[in-house]
Amino acid sequence: MVVTDEALEAGYRPGLCEGIVMSNVIVLNFSYPLVPEQLRKIEELAVVDIDAQIDPQQPLVPQLSALVDSAGRNPSDWQTVVIIVNPPSLNFSTAVLLAELHGRCGYFPPIIRLRPVAGSIVPRFEVAEVVNLQAVREKARRKRSGRTRSVKPF
Image 1 (spheres, rainbow, N blue to C red):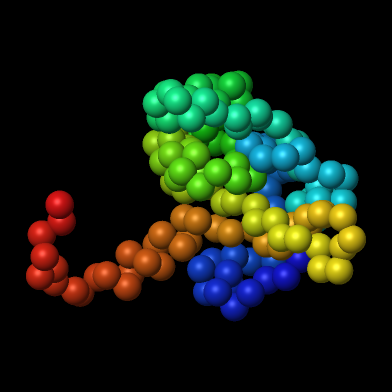
Image 2: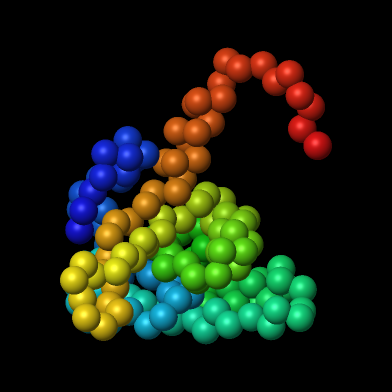
């Protein structure tokens, strides 16, 4: 797994799951099924595959809320179990999904970023990094502190 300077600055540390009871870590996979090679990269965590297909003719938020419900977690789990998300490929689904998860967990969960395998003849993907979204958010908030707003938001 490649760890970029940006990832380190944002709070990612190698051995993401060190010191965490592995039975309490769940990967919510809203994307294509992860292959064994990808699972080894994320330390063979428990994976819950969730079909993230949506109906583009229907409102998005209720569909994503139902997808998160289908993960089978109770309110306590959302706040106590370590959850890592493999987000769906559809950008607006991912945005709504992260807002829904933030509401349930109280923080932004880390996400898995996959990338194409270099030189692969057939399309294959590997785990590139785990991005700590909560650390990214906290770093961004520090950038705005001390600034005064000259424009009122919305």
